[in-house]
Image (cartoon, rainbow, N blue to C red; front, side, top):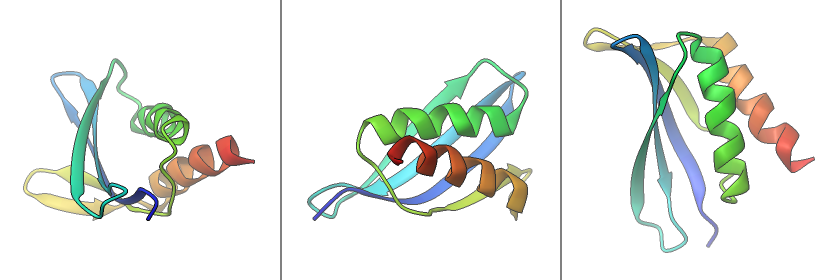
Amino acid sequence: MEARLDQVLVWLEQGRAVVQVEYFDALGKLRREIFYRPTHDLGRALEEVALVLAEQGLHGRPRVRRKRGSGLLVEPQLQERFWKALRDTHE
């Protein structure tokens, strides 16, 4: 079994972007990693993290949602930026 992405959450915290990635490892165990990016641009942060994940061999089309307050919002443009950055590194 290959590692595959499940879900990506993104939000701003103390002036920087936070990207939380959840994925299933090669043994099927759910894992979580958090990346802190020095930017206010959530799309840029997602692209940077996608490049790191691609280098680690992770793939898939995970749900990408923005955390705002206690809710999670689907923002298609952020999701597309993440998917594109992840896909472009595999081509």
